[in-house]
Image (cartoon, rainbow, N blue to C red; front, side, top):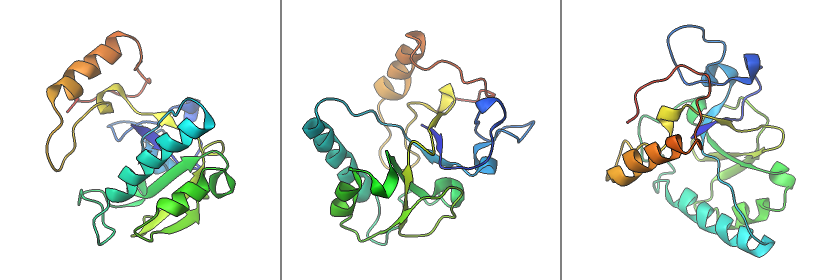
Length: 177
């Protein structure tokens, strides 16, 4: 979990979740949305197959009304964002269009957009980089539906931190769910 899609200048390159103290680095004040970064690997065909599976899950996660399943996810920091190299001009955009079976409006992301129901901002991931969120935001369970098992939300989280795969960001730390 992390942040992307904003145009604000993050002092020291640090983007943080809401916390007491200085708001200069808070993601929503910088115009970012909450996002997840995914690394695809393999041949071009394997990458396309992986991307299709992810997009099917992404578009299937919306309710038939095009609302998100978590009613708390409202506002610009929760807007629908998909970041791919070169945005709507990239090679992967055709797959997004093809798998957009709910007919959501696909727009070219310019940064700092508002949250519009049924709209997805397609961002150029080179122009709008990903900023990883704090350790405590990684591997937590949903706030709706069936909870993820503790082997994921606790055990795997600790394993990744202990292996150095989720180093501290420099942001204030909070409680892991």
